[in-house]
Image 1 (tube, rainbow, N blue to C red):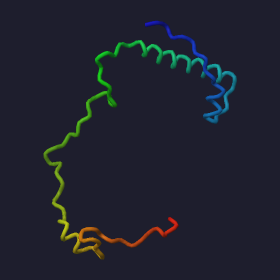
Image 2 (cartoon, rainbow, N blue to C red):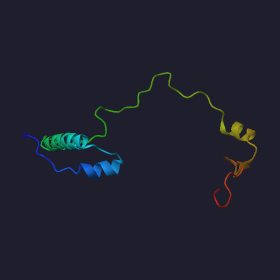
Image 3 (tube, rainbow, N blue to C red):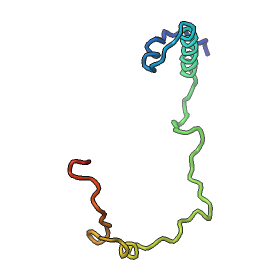
Length: 104
């Protein structure tokens, strides 16, 4: 791996986008720190990743269920619909309209 290369970073533009004011000392320090970060990313580009499967997580993600993680007995659909104030098309609960035609 080679040493990180210096990068031309527009600290003033970044500060403007972040809406922060920087002193000259802060501007200089931020330029050096951001350059080091970008340089480290350049070093990572040199890592051999042939045969490495792409992943969204560093570890395997599994859904771990315990033996007692079962849903409780729920009210069956017919009993629930019998308690509904109004039913539509046999199996849908009708609720009062919340939004008007204009959406407000």
